[in-house]
Image (cartoon, rainbow, N blue to C red):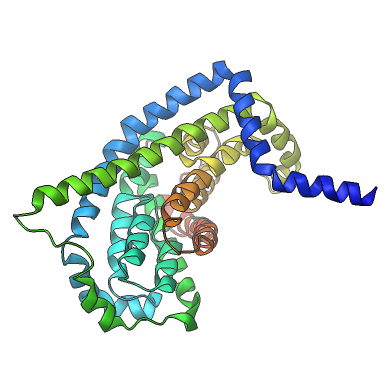
Length: 352
């Protein structure tokens, strides 16, 4: 009997993915009405927000990779990047572009660095832990101005998000510290031969390659947005979200936080845009609670972004572990910094 039970458990583990895919397919059929609305919403979100904000940055970063800009930034910022993050100066390009453009540019550049052997495997994994961030356009524009209708809230969340990112980078300087092997000078000298350098004669070809590569990336992101919109809709329609809310409610009551935050927090754990949108609409005298939860979700990024990053890093030998650990730590530290700023600076305290 014990052998039979162990055999069944083993078969379940082996076929778990197949079972989940089957349940997902059946759920799409059962909850087709609500799912159709969610999918349309996801496509609209991708077409009106993601494509306009990310596609130009994808093309721009691809074009910059065909120049010597990464090498020059490396020489300029090596004196800061090495002692702070234990990464050669070229890594600053991933951090800067990751902050300016948002998810998942930082991860894409870190993976490109590994493919082109600009940084070692360990350095690229350190980059993954802190360079893949929400951009100012999303935090200040979408979250601050559009959702919370307050520019100062956007600046507060962006400042704490940036500080948390830097903090994670400093902590992860010790990631596999004794395993780095590639010499800096040899890597820098060889970099110029890795990519075809842009010139007037090959500009059309390089631009075409950059656009095609960027279209592939943006389509993958669109697929994730749509699929996770569908998953969230199924979880709500099937009552799973409601069951989780009932289970977690005592914990939220114990820490004196309204249970109304449970569902949007659960939603944001999967896809941050929908989660933060719902959180911003919850009426609460202590708006700081809304902001602290928002800060965590912005730092963590959600399962959707995690899988986007995994789809990028899977084409290299980089481990996804430092990204997962780094984003969880990012979310926690962002909450801490947001709490400190709210309590120290009166103009960042929006409680009634």
